[in-house]
Length: 364
Image (cartoon, rainbow, N blue to C red):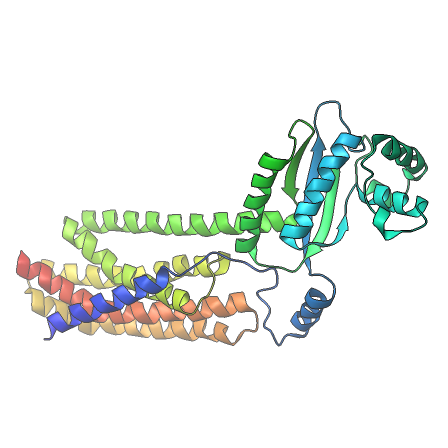
């Protein structure tokens, strides 16, 4: 009954879900797993607003050839780099190899703010360099450069804009370095834990999704061998693809970012959802092998395996649904999205899958 209406209904839902899924973007914030009402989150928000941010920024500076970090030519490039970083990244609390020179220059000029800069005259710079030799063993000075002066660092903090924005800014930094900085004097390298978090988060998310597609392919081949039919391989995938597309659409419409937490949901949900489909198709295959007609085989499968699938889904929903009450957002999202996918998978297995099997039999 109403086969065409069911197919049209699913087609519309898939189209809407795909549109929503196209809006998904990869992004990650350092403290995104804490709810806005959590005491720790409120404290961190205060530091974000009043103290220039909580996200650390680290850039390694590597002098090239025979140059070292304190050479006049190298320091001029560092100043250009520092000015770009402050302007583009909105850095605060900047610590750089240029700071001691700026402070010494200002101090020797009666504390006038206009002299808080690197002198343009090399002779004046060499004089400051000579004065600063007395402070080389000061701990704060050592934090800015290595003992052999072959490595320096720019360290700062900024308001966390999210990994998506940071990756865009990093690309601009790369372009600035290639166009404005003399690469024969210095090389640069972004470093620190936040760089690892940004890159690894994007890498893991992409690889989880790649693994998901590989799983689709393996299951399709397995079902094809089991039923000796390419059509059955396709039919076995449809009820498992649709719930994942629906969940992806839900994530996109509600502007929830794709990150390690939300990406792993798809693999968890797919592993559980495909189990229901395999049980349904295996029982259906047994009924057909016993010589029963297609319709009777489906009815018997629906009565026996269908009930088991419903009970299994209810039990799984009770387990994953409890995670929704967590204040930790990663746990909350896993509970929410796995539950949504399980519900969609159950509905699809009990409504669309039987129709696809009937359609296959009719066509053959």
